[in-house]
Length: 159
Image (cartoon, rainbow, N blue to C red; front, side, top):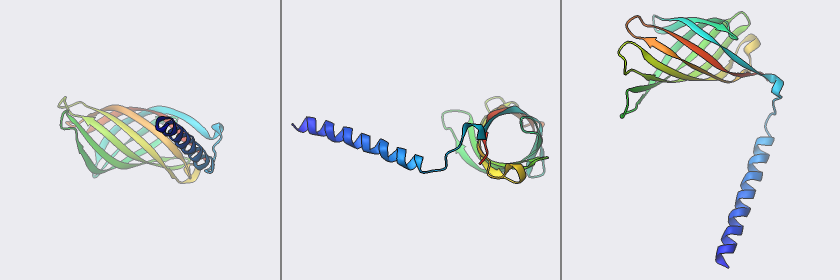
């Protein structure tokens, strides 16, 4: 009947969608597991210098961190959270690593903004050319001293 044919149609549509996704995903570049590396460490001594925040990354990524703030993306009307974006580069002895940051800052405590950042890698120079992946940073920013410290972890994949 109609119910059975609708179920059959839905099942066929679901199967066709899965096959289509498999073909679409399968046609892209395949990365081996060995091309991706887990990273972790700390962003230390972050402070404001002119129009940038700068700091020192230590751990799996070592170098000078430079962040340029983009436009604020808005605030949560039911909380004390502000959303923002920006671009960062980490200058290492192997080249320059670049990523885009999407951040959430909770400013409930006047001088201790709890912060979470999703960094989407956008390649770089030298050994970082073609780098992809994500890094998550969490920590605190102190507006009165314009300083902060963060922990980071994530995965960097190389072509």
